Amino acid sequence: MNKVSSILARKGTSTANVSPGTSVLEALRIMAEKNIGSMMVMENGNYLGLITERDYSRKVILKGKNSTDTTVAEIMSADLPTVTPSDSIDHCMELMTRNNIRYLPVFENDKLAGIISMSDVVKETILTQKETINHLQNYIRNS
Image (cartoon, rainbow, N blue to C red):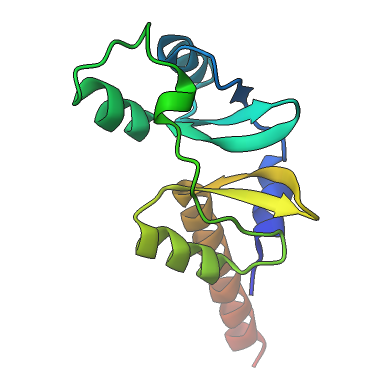
């Protein structure tokens, strides 16, 4: 069974981040520049939360707030469940589905180790299925 560590090994552990006082507009610019849908909110090296495009649409646009005047701290998600590199992909899928979220911060020994997305989980699941199919095909050929 594949683990979160497989995803981190493939995509890396570096994360884009902003401070809590950053304007939402600036955070969106950075996300657009990097072609990503979320960023960590960090202060003095400590993880505070996550800001996503979904946070923006639901907590700024739909509430009539201004992207320039609203800070990341005002709309970030701070109560996301977390996972560790040794957690299974199935566990991540269950957490994401149950909590209706698309991102999970990854912690190892109480330190931020990265972030995984629903897309990462789906890709890892597809890779695992392809490996299983290849093994079965090889088994059938060699029988």
